[in-house]
Length: 217
Image (cartoon, rainbow, N blue to C red):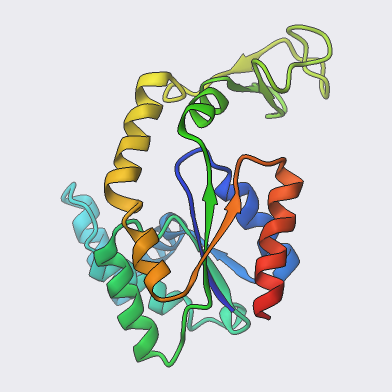
C-alpha cells in the first residue's frame, strides 16, 4: 500500500505517520531524511542534490522524486510506504505520479487531516517541552500537574520553539493554503482523497486513519 498524509503544519502528521508505520506495516519516508541519506551515500542523485545544497539552492522536484525512486527500491519498502511532507505542490504530485507509473506502482490513498486554522494556531503557539526529557505540554490543554515542574523528570526547565509564535504560524498556514491545498482537488478528482477529523483526540485520529486504510487493504 502506498499512502500520502496531508495536512497543514502542526496538524500532527508526524505523530500519525509513526503510528501508521506501526499499525499498517508501512515505511514512513521523510524527504529530508532521504535527501541526507542520499547525499551521505554518494549516490548519483545524492551527488546532484549535494551540488544544489552546497550552492545554497533548493533541490529540484526532479531530484527529490529521483531520491524517492531510489529509496523505494530497498527491501523494506516492498510492502508499502507512507509519504509525509511530500508532495507539497501539484507539480510535485504530477512528477510523483509519473515516477510511480514508470515503476508499475500506484498510489492507494491520500489522507487529509482536516483542521480548523484558528484552533491550530492556538494549539501550536501554546505548546512547549521539558528541556531535560522532552515531554510535551500545552498552555491550555496539557499543563504540568504542578505548575512549572515536569511530570516525568521533575525538571523546572522548559523550551518553546522560536517559530511557534502566532505570526510565523499564520504565515506557514498561508503558504500551505496557497501551495499545498490545491493538491486536495487534484487527488479528489482521482478518487484517492480520504478526509479525517484532525481536530479529534490523537487516538481518535489514529482510529479514523486505520479504518480508512483497513478498508483499502
